[in-house]
Amino acid sequence: MTINETQDEIIEEFALFDDWADKYEYIIDLGKKLKGLPEEQKTEDNIIKGCQSRVWLNARFENGELFFDADSEAIIVKGLVNMLIRVLSGHTPNEINAADLYFIDKIGMTSHLAQTRSNGLASMVKQMKNYAIAYGLKA
Amino acid sequence: MITTDILDIQKIRADFPILNQEINGKKLVYFDNAATTQKPTAVINAIAHYYNFDNANIHRGIHTLAERATRDFEASREAVREFLGASSIEEIIFTSGTTQGINLVASTFGRKFIKEGDEIIVSGMEHHSNIVPWQMLCEEKGITLKVIPVTEQGELDMEAYENLLSEKVKLVAVNHVSNSLGTINPVKEIIALAHEYGAKVLIDGAQATSHFNIDVQDLDADFYAFSAHKLYGPTGMGALYGKKELLNAMPPYMGGGEMIKDVSFEKTTYNELPYKFEAGTPNIADVVALKTALEYADALGRENIAAHEDMLLSYATEQLSEIEGLRIIGQAKKKVSVLSFVIDGIHHQDIGVLLDNQGIAVRTGHHCTQPLMQRFNLLGTSRASFAVYNTIEEVDRLVAGIHRVKKMLL
Image (cartoon, rainbow over all chains, first blue to last red; front, side, top):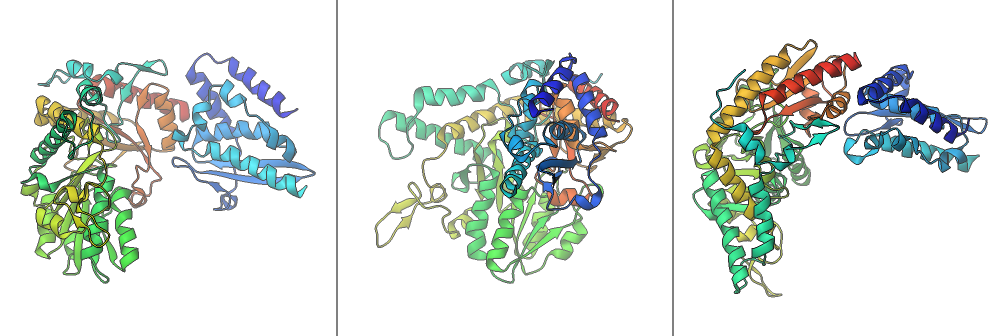
């Protein structure tokens, strides 16, 4: 599935919810399902510091594709991270680098990327792209 | 239902247009007053009036507008003097807020009078803005920073404080009220003890001024800093009180216009107090509007405001205490209307996001008091803080909101 196909799939899933609580319950559920990172990978190197909650991101490069694992202390952030991984993980650095993550806006989660949230999610997207740039240069 | 209010809260709410709106489809409940209070129409109008009718640069102009702007600017200084109980307007310096007031003292008093080997005392419940300026000074000059510990209840350990005091201590910098816990600190006692050792005391009044009357002479404070925006006034301005003899002995803070008497390339002489510390064109409109904010609170009666807020705090404390898994952080005997809490198994950010979706604004995080959070082994808390326009019904909304958050997350 391409990055945009996954994004469209998520947008369709969210179209089913007509109130904020259903939407957030779904995200919370996604957060609970994200397997996260083992404690030894929650290192200072992997941390993306936000004012509100910490996010850890780990990247693996296998057969020309980039895979992400991540974790957060906050469950809603974890749910959003789950979706980001679903969209970006397993693609080539070039694809990830070029990705326009329009699904975040379409599902009404743009405020979570806003600076005021300071939750590290925007930094997380940036860090994923940085990994893509770095591995893209290596590849 | 508690209805012992002297104040007509619904009438007061009508003075704050921002409150009358929906957030995420629900009527706004604004419980982030310790971060900043909302502004009454009178304050908003005062700013507009200044720009519509009186705007001019102050002090040196001889035209009518300059005179009007200067008159209103200085009238605000007199209002602040009266509000703080200072003896002279020379002791009132307008700043950009509490942070600048503290930095001013660190950069001038600190640099001139505190030397290598000396000590500065702060408390374990300070806002970063009353820690970092002193750390910077300590690093620069080889001064030692000592910290008054905080008890489990969220009060200062006064016995430990007395033990920290010695002839080496040149300055004690503590807050009047803790922004994270709401604790009202015994600053009069803190000041008296410091003075026994010849140390000067700076009080960070940012969280105190909206809740009760201040009397710097009764407290015998050497410096007292506050921000306008926490007491119904505009953002980006505040004032620093300093005892005249100290301010006179201190070097200027920033160089520029207004703070000088005469400038030549050979020698510049500095202006008198308080202008010596007010370089550049100040935030005239907001200074003028601060007077309006002070008058607004005076008209309601500060005791009445405090009584209403105390009622909200005790009701909210009682209601929140009944929520299973919820723990209130900061149980000092004397508190302002600040309620910090954590819920077992739930990250504060999730609480903040889910309350916001219900139209309820609280603050979540470390509240710029990371050392205090570390003291309680916390990453952060959720904090509801009440102002004069808040109601019992809104507290009920918060309680229902928290129950909903718990149901969604646990």
